[in-house]
Amino acid sequence: MTPEPVHWKLVVDAHDPHAQAEFWAAALHYTFEDHSVLIGKLLGLGAITPELVLRHRERDAWRDAAAVRHPADPHDPESGTGLGRRLLFNRVPLPEETAKNRLHIDLHGPEGARDPEVQRLRALGARVEAHVEEPAGSWTVMTDPEGNEFCVH
Image 1 (cartoon, helix red, strand yellow):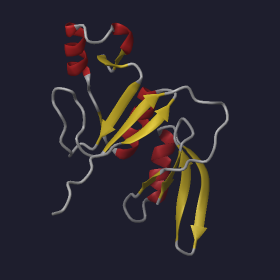
Image 2: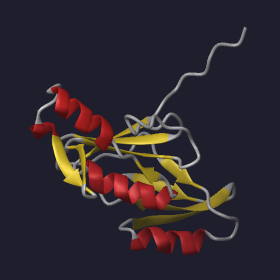
Image 3: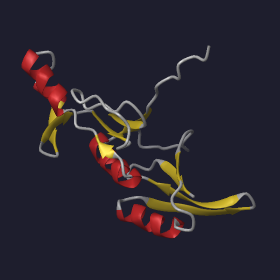
Image 4: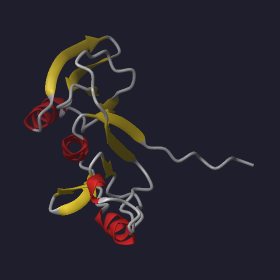
């Protein structure tokens, strides 16, 4: 019997989770998750306090977390939570010093369209760090608005 696959999401520490989620939603053409129905329900029940919430996109949102999901994947309509490919951004205090990412995202656009994709991502706030040319292939190393590395192939 084959075991059931494990459901997972990639969690990213962020100084500003909503700005990071906006960037990655645009970069990946993903959907910014709307948790306002769940938040309203929990506020109405007194299960959470208003200090845990802020207004984002004219809706209630978690103060310290934001997420994006693949638009074709299923989601829970009550909580707004994606049930498939998903990135979750959690607010954490970030130290001033940085180190190389141990995990990063590779973006693969249409064949031959790397340069326009790099320009699109730069317009969203990403920075080019390096262009890599190796016998196995070439790619562009970029950083998102908070300095997290990713590669464009």
